[in-house]
Image (cartoon, rainbow, N blue to C red; front, side, top):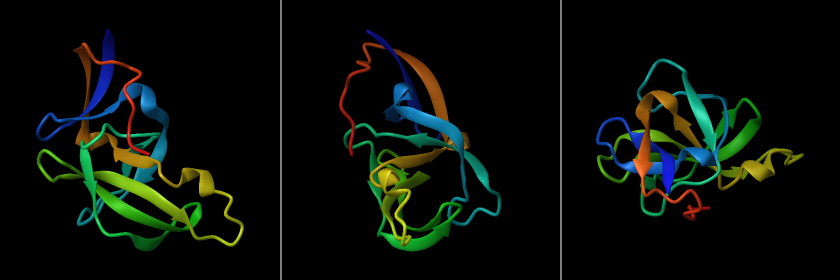
Length: 123
């Protein structure tokens, strides 16, 4: 079975199946970076592919949210964030909790033999 994979640009570690991308219309500023970068909105990551930092509160375009930075398990580079909890009064974006944003410039997309597109991810 063939599959497109999102991999860490720095070390090549597999992070997610390309099929788990829900949207490519997100953006984010990585810690310590001055520029806002394009990002994928991703349903899930591969098991053990990434680690998350402590949860912190921030204000995103969609309102107040709790998020955690996501780092590649292979090289510790911050590659995105995890939506933890919608903190707005209306909770209109509560469906984003548990999903991820991955910075496109931190990734390579590769074709991989033997990648099972049905492999479960983290939620």
